[in-house]
Image (cartoon, rainbow, N blue to C red; front, side, top):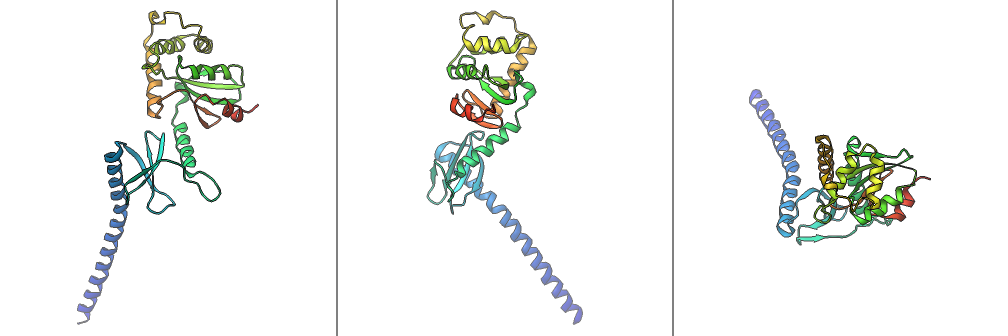
Length: 247
């Protein structure tokens, strides 16, 4: 009788433990299932591939990251609404911008500086993704020309808009004095030259392709884009440049 009772107790304990484990596993799976459902619904509604889905402080509202971290928006599953805009806390801080900053900081950590063209030796660190024929890129280049900066330049021609930009990028990469070649091109001094006839080595092509791959990997879809002393700056935002540069 005693042995039967002990057997029943042991069986009961095992049953409780198994049920608890199953509940934990179910709870662990449920959020992932929900995220998969949200991702599928967003793709169905807006043809957007999501990259990250997280709950927000607002009940029933999810934060969605897409387009290689370039887009942050929100989704309400119950009403199936996609929401673009900012969420602010009680201290007037934008939680949306905070997320964008986190995403851009992650990108910064993934940029291999050894693949860039290094120009200058100043104390301000500027990482630049630029198109040699982009007017806003040229405006930014002129701004930085006499500033106390070290630039790490990635040449990302938008060839659909600027069909000669690729040959100008390769001209810069091939030059013995890359800084001089960069400023020549960005000033427009090479606009009338037929750089398409230049002989390009395999090393130059490899560097050019490596820069394109880096730009694609971190989601560069337009130029110019900068990180100035670690701060992300889209476009030739001169006022922001002034704010971020250390004198």
